[in-house]
Image (cartoon, rainbow over all chains, first blue to last red; front, side):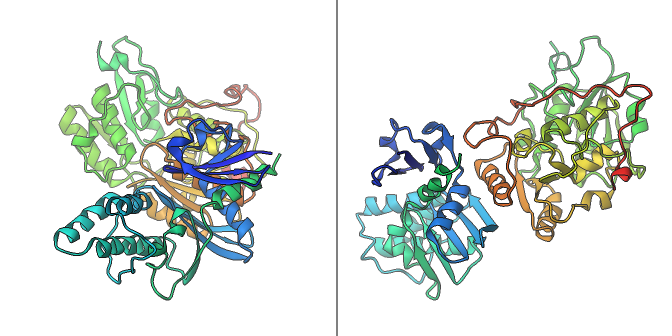
Length: 216
Length: 303
């Protein structure tokens, strides 16, 4: 039995391998926790053994995706990363903490501030340039000040994030998505219409840790 | 106390501690011709490319923002150290930024800047790059060789599991990510060979070997590195000074998924030391070459 954790910037995802229980809690509430193996921005303080996020993402993808080749994008609170594998071989990857930073966190923040229900907001065909969360928010507030509804402004913001993320992975027609944004229906529908997005949920990196657990 | 007296060596390898004897201090940039360096080895030779303890960062106000970290370091070191003269290789092996910096230093310091062009094509060999030593040790030895050339007895790594291409990094912690015996390619290899303008050698990378192509952010070599990474199915990374977590992660993931296992265990912290030499290096400096024994092989002998 082991506790595996993805200690992200704002959210922590835990898996108890003994009971199979999965939990998501704010990282600020996970300060006392010690896992067996950890990944995520705060992993180094939370476990004696840690695995970097790209490796955890790739291993998680290998466990969850049965196709021989895939592109797996992870949009986190603070950064965006992806891996492209074929037959277990890593063909491409990237991880940005500058452009695209804080986008997930900002979208979550805006939802709470404007009290929005992302399940009901219609995606926009327009977008704001979301170089990063902070610069994107500046654009969004400008739209609101010009009379654009808060819902529409946030929808444009979400589309800006989606378009950036899609470009980041080379604009494939189909890809898998990991992370908390899998639960944001507005974001999922903000990618270009012909693009197929397959959400895998928030535990992909933790799944990747399971692969590590079996190593000596 | 003057900056010259306070200056101390950082990595030990490249920047010699300066004794307070008032001797002539020569700072050098890049890989000047051996005869120029040899003529000054009785001076206090300081490699300005290397990290120098205590040099305040002043480049921010004097250089464009898109200037690489090594040029920043050169300026900071020179302003801090105030050498009596600066010896610079501004030939084909060096960049326009360094040439521009030479003019700037001349303006700022009012000291002689001796401009040289190292067009040497007679290879001194690359036994360190091809040895079985840890990569950090290799880089230290190569840099130390500029200050104090000495014969070394090294074992060749018969089958390097990986390679790293590029100039000496501003953040040496990158070298801790690779397994022992990783082959050194690119300009660092040219540096050991004393042929900094040898384009052919700089471009060389063995087929099939997992190779990380590294450049400093804002360095023109980034174009070369990225192209070579594509050509050789390698990984291109750049770093502006300290290595970021994403860059570390990319290198680790690349090596792992290419089947390269490293001596360190993830999570051990061995590969996460800081940028300024807080490294764990195994082994000691190889013993000096004994008189009468076989000298280290030259590059040509190793094919």
